[in-house]
Image 1: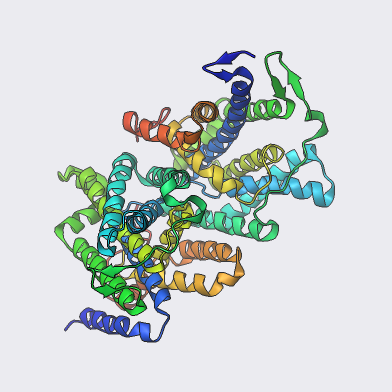
Image 2 (image 1 turned 120 degrees about the vertical axis):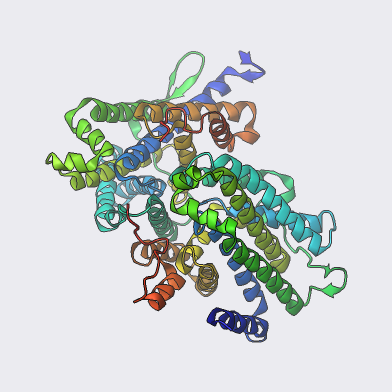
Length: 295
Length: 318
């Protein structure tokens, strides 16, 4: 068995893959947060709860309706997105004239409600979600085994992130969106329906969270607290990357996942806190974040 | 005597008499959370900084006080002081990092750093991990007054609360407090007038953290318990809720909010997870239609007709 610094290559690569999978979720979630923040100026605290909801919807579709993984991958994010649209239309839209902090407080309340409902219904022991048959097993890469599903999660997340980047940076719709972020009043004066755009942006952002939830369901257990566990780390990721750049969010998310994985191998005691330590360091050397713009 | 002075005197008499009617332990819990919420309000209500990590100071002070008694055998008064100092020192570090960013980022940074403190508390041996520190003996205050007596303990908690409250009241109404308010209203302008905004923010943060620590340490002494619940982000959210419900930026609001929420939790404890749903619901209602909070609404009602300045939480001109 080959070893690096006294650690087997297999264990190291295994942790790196897990880190990459975690990083993919950080990337999708922080991307959604950044898109929402750009348009609504709200930090969506409910993002983690909606991610959890996506995972639960997939589980419910499978166990109550017999609908498998692939349709869920489409149905659950759409359902979460519609739910988000209802939230935006019924609550968030009243807050745009106020201090941004009220948006954070409102979505925090929503997160508590969602988490409480699911905890009440399903308890706090996780529910297993069976891996789709096509992805059971692993690729043998010679020096390690790469579980097929983990590879799929990384690839799918990258595709979704890059697709989002393409739509926002390279299409006409994205141009409206970016213009709306810069100066909503002027864009509205040009005849673009900005309130509708805001609603759809929120719906899309939380649909991304729902999609991440479905992707996560077979990897982790479906758990009412899975959202709040990840959302605080994603906040730190957002602080580290800054919300100014889409590619920045993706790169930061993946990189921090990898660093977390490495920490698990070399110094497991710090693996839970390493992201926060990096955040503190970034705040000292580059307060606006790696890809952020100083306001 | 002014109306306010009469009101305070009435409340004081009420507080002295309360333990003869209501369960003292419950009152102590309420008072500790009330002090915690007042300390938190010093930041959100008077400096405009939303910290989402105040549980870290509350909880760490509780652990420190508990360990000082159980591990080092310190007398209760020194244990509470130790807890307060540790919270203030932690507040210095967290504040020093967090004030580099504003608004929403400030909230996220404090939340993330508090989560780090939480993981720290899960891992280090002296906190007792999942079990927490249990059965912390109350001991004798100054070696004389036996705190095992619930009444003695209650009056100590009350004295601590009044001390903290008076200090916060003094801070708010001092020139220093006026500068904090100016930072809340218009930070760039305060900066351009020559105030070193960051220093004021940091000092406000340390004071708030220290007073939260006083509340946390007193709570551990009174209830004999320090646990992971106290450092968890739910606790940070709860103190936000207490302050919001009572009224952001009102001196007495957080006290009302703390008593209401603590009482609610006490009576709804049998409902399990639904408590979290109800708390979330109160959050949503407060933000949507009740932004001034209980005390803020009462003040607005009293002021109606007269000019009445804008309260925090009302949509100001943009």
